[in-house]
Image 1 (cartoon, rainbow, N blue to C red):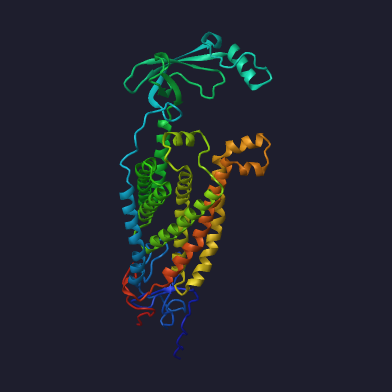
Image 2 (cartoon, one colour):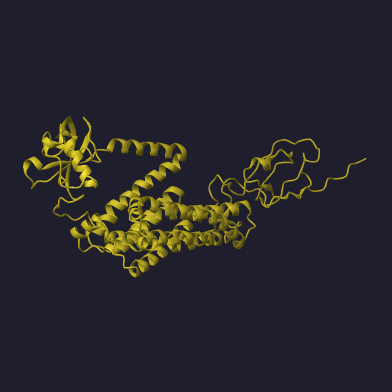
Length: 492
C-alpha cells in the first residue's frame, strides 16, 4: 500500500528567512533553533520537509540568507530612503563645517595673569626633605589667640600654638628656576599634608618678595590619573574590540573639538550658544558615524539627537532668561567674567547644558534606533505603528533609568552645597530659590526633558524609515548571501 503524502508543515514563527534556498529536502535538524532570533523558513508549504515526518535525513543543504541577524550589520535601506536621509544630513553637515570655519578662534586670546585662583603661573616641584617643628617657632598660627576655645577658630588656634607643624623643603623641577628650593610650612589642621619625596605643583608669583615667590598649591596626580586612563582604554578595547577602539578615537576627537574650538571661540567673544550648538553637532556627527558606521540606522540616531538638542536649546534659553540666572555664581565664573567681561555668562551656562546633555542623548537615540531595527528584522511584517508601540516600551524603561542617572549625577556634583544648606536648616523652597541650586535644577530638568523627548522622536523616525523600505528593491537586497528563491524551496 502506497503511503499517503504528508501534509505541509506550517511554521508558526512570525517571520522567516527571505530567499532561503535548499539543494534538496533536509532533516528537521534544529536549524531554526540555532539562530538566536528564532527565524523560520519561508516556503514551508513545500511537501518535501523531510526529517520531521519520520523520513530519513537528506544530505546537507546550502542556505542563502535574505536578511541580517541581530549580531551582524544592518541590511541597507532602499535607494530612495538613502537619498531622503542624505538630503537632510548633508546640508546639516555642511552647515556645521561652515560654522566651525567661520567661528574658528585660532587659539585662546592672551592676557596678563592675575595670580588669582587658576590664573597663576605654575611649575612642577618635589619635596626633598621634611621635618617636624614647633608651630610657634615658624609663626604658623594665623588665628588671633583671643578667639574663644569653644569656637572652631579658637580650637584651631590652640592646636597651631601647641601642636607640631611640618617644615618641607621643596625643589622646583621645571621652568626657568629649575633647581631652586624654598620652604613650605604645613599646619597640623591643613587638609593637604606633604610627604618626603612627594611630587607637587607650585605657584609662581613674580611680583612677590623672593622668599615668597613660590608656594605649594597642589600635589602631582599625573601618574595615577594616566594609569587609570590606560586601564580604561585597555578595558574598552578588550571588550569592544574594533568598535571600542573607534569609540576611543571618537573620544579623543571630541576632546579636541572642545579644547581647540569650543573653549577658545567662547573666550574670543563668540556667542556661547552658537558655539555650543556648532561644536556639539560636530562632536555628534564624528562620534556617532565613527562608532556605529555610515548607515541609515546611524543617520536616524543623528536626526533624533539633533531634534532633541534643538529642544534643549530652546527650553534652556527660555527658562534661563525667565529665572534670571546670570551664570556667575562662584569664584571661578567670577574670575572668568573679570578676565573676559565680554563673555555672556548666561549663554555660557546654556552652552554647558547642551554639551552636558549630548553624551546621554547619543546613548538614548542609538539604543532606540537599534531596537526598532532589530524588531523589524525579527518581524518584517510589522508596520510603523506596531514597531513604534513595541520600541516605545523599551524606551520607557530607558527613560526611567537615564533620567534617574542624570539627576543623581548633578546631585552628586552639588553634594557639598546641599550639605551646607542642610547644616543651615534651610527650607526646600529657599534652597531651590537660591541661584546656585536653581542653576542645577534648570540644567537637570531641561536636559531630562530633552532626553525624554528623544525617545518618542527617535523611535518614530526609525519606525517610519525602516517600514518605508522595500525588501524587493535593489538597495534592499540581502547583505549576507545570494537569494536563489523568494519564499520557496527547490523540490526534489
